[in-house]
Amino acid sequence: MELSLLILIVIFVAMAVLKAKYPAIKGAVGERFVNKKLSELGTSYRVFHDLYVPNDKGGTTQVDHIVTSPYGIFVIETKHYDGWILGQENQKYWTQVIYKRKEKLYNPIWQNYGHIQAIKKYIGKEYFEPIHSIIAFSSQSTFKFKETFKSAKVIQFPQLLKVIKEWNEINISELELQELNRALEKLIIVDRKVKRQLQKQHVQTIKTNLKNQKVKETESVKQNLCPKCWGELSIKKGKYGSFYGCGNYPKCRYTRKI
Image (tube, rainbow, N blue to C red):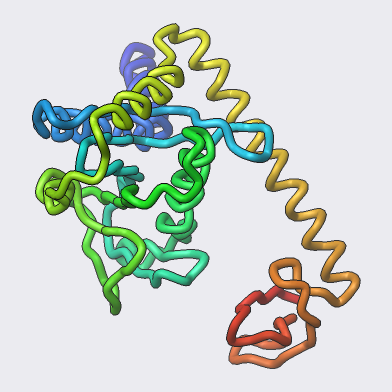
């Protein structure tokens, strides 16, 4: 009886640990798949994985994959999501739907735009044109988009190589490409201990920035000002009750619950 109970406890604990670790395991498996895919691009391409690029806030921005080539630079943000994916290019949050459960995710096009700006600044080429944004979702996802995106390619993992090779005209000289690769090589961290420390710092910086952003937003709302565009806020009524809305609507769509 005691042995059976012990076995049940061990199984229960193992299942709980597996459930808690599942997103990380799933992400790691997905990243390995993407890494393998990108390694098949050929000798004209150089692939960089998991780089921490300095940003203008004194911290870093974590970039999943950067591919350099004579045809352009490709900045890839990977999303290991199942279910339906809904969203628009200018919408702050997208939605993941699995059966009746809905989850928000920050617009990955906006997220990758931030990565690209950080990369441009880091390499000293803020007006660099041949740099392309790619958002790659798991093949377990189903897109429910109502529009074609203009500033990024939103695809699934198996389409990666085909989409990257759509760009086939030389836009970067051999010398310029060598300089770009040397700059990105400086961001490669081989020491796992150093990388773990950098990851912790990166997460802590994000938490601090979010906290400061919330404080700033709260203060601006107290002054009846929109924290996004500094337009005047007013109380509006909607389907689900009253809320603060920006006076510059529809240019600015900021809202906040009362």
